[in-house]
Amino acid sequence: MKKLMLLAAIAVFGLTNVNAQETTFGALAGLSILTPDVDGVDTDSETGFHIGAFADIGISESFSVQPELTYEMAGDISLLNVNAMAKYHVSEEFNIQLGPQVGFAGGDDIDALDDLLGDDFTKLNLRLAVGAGYDITEDIFVQARYGFQLNDHFTGDGDGSVKINTLNLSVGYKF
Image 1 (cartoon, one colour):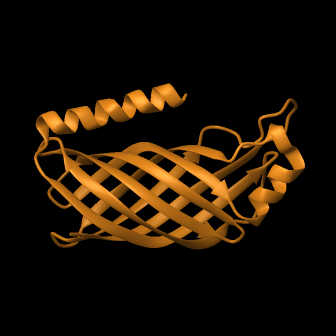
Image 2: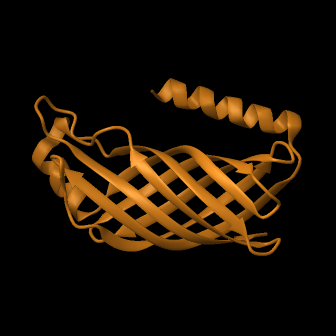
């Protein structure tokens, strides 16, 4: 899995060096809603915040890649994420997004599960995210994104399952 992610990152960044149109950097922040799903029973969603930094790397007039480093916290759960969102620009202002989000979970609830399950638990949170963004001005944008967790925090034998899906509503500023 690590080799696959490394190859994907090399391919993405390799393409950006060949055809880069424009690169901008910026910061984003906003509302996070984390929805833990433990053993197939939806638990209450936790509302919190996220903050991060990004680069928006233009590949062509209608396509860009937005790598991000974000921190999100809601209730007793926190995630440190490395995201690589592909963005298709439907118009000059509107884009749709799809890409992987690799997170490392922490917080009191995650630490308690890690202590309880030991080797049968991983803090790795691998999600596939889909979303949309809108450029309000040349420098300010809003975006909404939902991340579906692909892996399971519970890695042991049996029917147990622990997943965390995320909804992020962000406001961003391009430098």
